[in-house]
Structures are given as C-alpha cells and as structure tokens.
Image 1 (cartoon, rainbow, N blue to C red):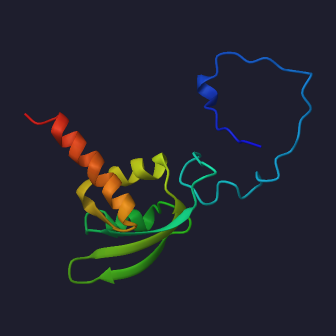
Image 2 (tube, rainbow, N blue to C red):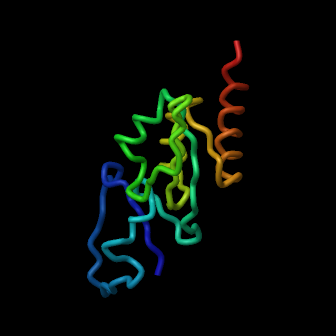
Length: 131
C-alpha cells in the first residue's frame, strides 16, 4: 500500500467515499517519521549516515538547535571552534533545504552524493545570479 503526504493547506475540496473500506497500513506507525527531517519520506529511500563539519559561525547554532534527534557530536576542534556532527537520516528535500541554509558554514563530509547534490545546487544558483 502506498503512502502519500498531502499538504492540508493546499487541499481545495474533498469527497468522502463510502464504497471503499479503510485498511490500516502496517508500514505506518508512530515511528514512521523518526528517520526524516520534516515529513517527506519516500519508501525507496533508506536512512544514511550524514557527517558534516560546521565552522565556528554555525557550530553552536547546530549544537543548540539540532538538525535531527539522531544528531551527535563526533569531534570538537578547539583550534578553530569547529565541530563535526553525525546524523542518521533519510536524505530528503527538507534536509537538503536546511543544510543549504547554513551556507558556507558547513561542509558535508559523508556521503559524497549529498555533498555533490549541494555543490550542484550552489553552482546552479551562482550561474543564474552572476552580475
């Protein structure tokens, strides 16, 4: 059975159908969203280990406002006040969007695919806004 996330503020109309019997989905439980940032979860995507280094401009913010409940500190660099964090999450648009918000204050160390995804987004943005 396929699950859908629907934005309630975008629903214009709905109709109740009495000819369909409700069936509970065994894949959807209290912990269904535990491994995502936000609410977008695709069944084909699996949880990954994300490792990122935050410079001194972002480290304390990420420390005090965790990106996800799985977040933990891997390393604190006393010399430059940077911190390395690890998360165990599904890579979705909400996570990518939040990471983009940290700008140059973070560097994705793992996985390479996420680092490349962010790099591609930054490059595209730069090419569109060159003056």
